[in-house]
Image: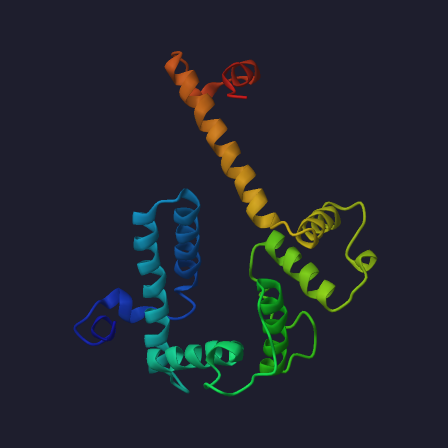
Length: 222
């Protein structure tokens, strides 16, 4: 990456900024997500490399700007965070950490406590990434506020589509269901059904781009 960004390297790479790379960062993460969903290990390996490229790219840009930091600084901060959030794992031998974290649920609660202390959060919703997909955002907000003791009846409710969608996402999350994953599964299943119907229509000698309602119902797989 140093060579690509240096004189004599790649003109396109040299021109990129944090902002110009945002779309690629999101796209690469979604491509990795899809590879994992599809169970395609070859694609997972490739997409992990593409996500890693984004990390290296942004770190290299940061090293050139004001208040610079490098990929080594990023890695060092990550190591410090992992150690700080797992004191029961990384405490020196013979030192009692005065805590027992023996389940995933306990660990999640402990992480929230440590993150609040690290970042000095003044609100239970500080640190929630508002740029994430809306269903995931609603679920995260519901989860955070539930842990803070917010009564369920104070969550958004009403007759509007937005309120209904939020309420559905919140109800799923608080029941231990990931609404984003559930909606994606349903959407992917619908996509497969559409493709199957179009293939069946094509095999029957019809143009799948010109199907009427009756034809769609005839070839629909379920």
